[in-house]
Length: 449
Image (tube, rainbow, N blue to C red; front, top):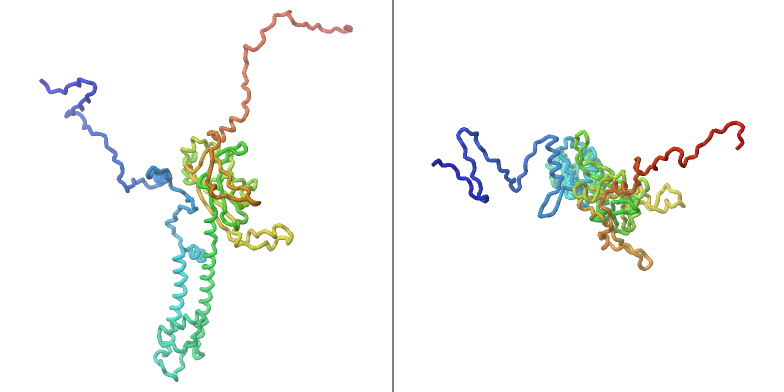
């Protein structure tokens, strides 16, 4: 009997694979795609399309340990997650040496601070020693009849000590420049001028670095979440900001930026596009009197980027809201404005332009926005004064909020115009001629009736 594969007897048995004949094309099984190994990363082609795909992959959420995480543009504490690289013209930093030194970290700043003094001491000490060696003061050490240029400088160590004593104006009296050499007087004058310049630069940088109000932002706090609910019959995005110090911020202003990547109609990809969120700039609500915690509101209207945002689409969006709070530290401001009239209110208030500006930042991603919630009040009246309970600063409660977008809510509220149409069934039936109709006779001349 020919050896043919037998047909399956039951429906549960799998059918055998077809036999491969010599004349048939080679049969290859489909390639199996293995997952990448841990710690490896698939390479994407370079160029604008490759960089765009890589940016979208890095911007998307990453699941780590069951928790949704994504790359932030600004952290919750206000640090910008942007690294600058491949800077070609680094000489631009030297043109603004003062800002460059102030921006250094403290360990490098102290290192530069010490090296400026040490290098000048060693440099002028070496010049003093070479001058003493060239004049023969070192060879005539201990000779009372020899008139040296610098007394008691007979080696490099003694020349270094004389350099330190001269620049720091210590003056122990054992070493000094005599009037027998003019070069010693010129070197002493040059070292005094250089030392004064270094003192002015380094002490000024140290003062500015210590007095910078960057740490003042640590006492300016923001709520961990944003909320979306209705206020005055309008859908609003709200967050809370507060100041923990008794010394308040002068001329505090707040603004918000929306960071979101998009693609234009022409196909151009704009990564991390920045758009402004109106926090009341036209009405002056963006200027805060930050004595107690304030709830900052962004009205979602037709000018807002969230005009089409609903509760369902919020889960699919990827964006980041950057909050920037700026103000003048009251402790560093002038007690009054010198140009203001003496009996005006501006003369009694701190001068806004005379203090140091402080900036506090934070950010909110799409998963930190609570739809249908509202902040709980944290201020009450106790014993003749207002009391702020910061333990309720982060508390929210759920309120009834429609899940539709602001655009859909406005369309529902607008009255619909009546539809124009002819309903033939509602028209009265035609009357036969001569029934129920009054015939008007033409009026002839001479008739008075």
